[in-house]
Image (spheres, rainbow, N blue to C red):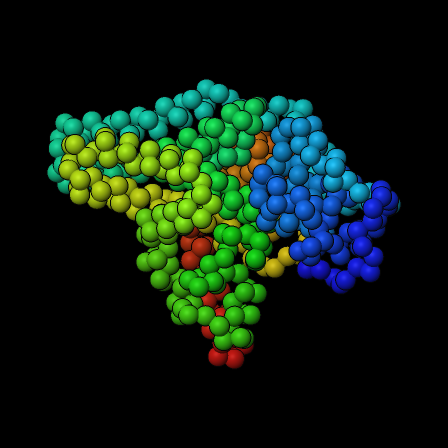
Length: 434
């Protein structure tokens, strides 16, 4: 939040600023931020930001050094866009020891080559996706549309879609190719033609989440207030104001009805459709149409129109459960609150937890069981998370930071426990029982 008005206008020449001065430039018409102790005026340029105006504006008035470093691989290229925005630098720069040591760790990971992708890993993953789809099609072709081959094909297709989701996630984070353009093309094709969604829509949501995980009004993944209230502060605030249209004290129960079953089959279809038409994103729309043409060309002639449509919705129903539990287990049980302007490491640790590693867990979650490492180093190829994890754990131990890793079923149960706790907070505040 802004701490007050600034008496002077934006200076016209290069000068030194205190961090307090920068922190006040966080309004709609006055946005500054700090990167590597340099001060940049992003007021007008934020609308041109490739990641979206919201993403970069979330750091207005703050030090964005570690976020900028984490999100950009080609820093020399990106720095060219910063030069015209430079207006000064921070006077008497001081960084806390945790931040300095984390930046040293970042440099170490680069020297270790942990940002180099194993192309054989990615190729094998891609081939497995096509393999699951091919087996599903052959199964229907050989055995027809009886309930057993139909259900089995749905399970195989859901597996392909879930794994394609992890692949598009890799490409979206620029962790597959060195060249950013190749990552973008690969992401467009994978999320559009293989999954039937919009690349730009995914980028718009996902990078805000990474920049400010679990921060109310900045992370779109926690903006669920008309269905679910998350964390401690939001339920209390809504309860005290007697806001809300749902019986939130029952949210841990109706989650099983409106959460995993409906997220992909209903909500994502509606949101993607709205997004591409609102933005007039005809490329993404064409790729989405291409996905449906591909799917119904594969299964329509074998099953007939309605049975093929039923297979598609059944696939999405299964995938939705897979996706929802995996993506929410790392964040919902953690702190969810308004902006605290923490350093990069602390902000990721308080909002993120891991699930214990293992061959099945790694495959099932697309290595998102290493969520802490992924959030600290989002462009790192996921097959290298296990190499950096011990270094992160050591850093957390040194600075007494809570590094949580738990069994997968415990992580799933913690989602429900967290929803129950938040719902009770709302109920107590609403009826003044606290």
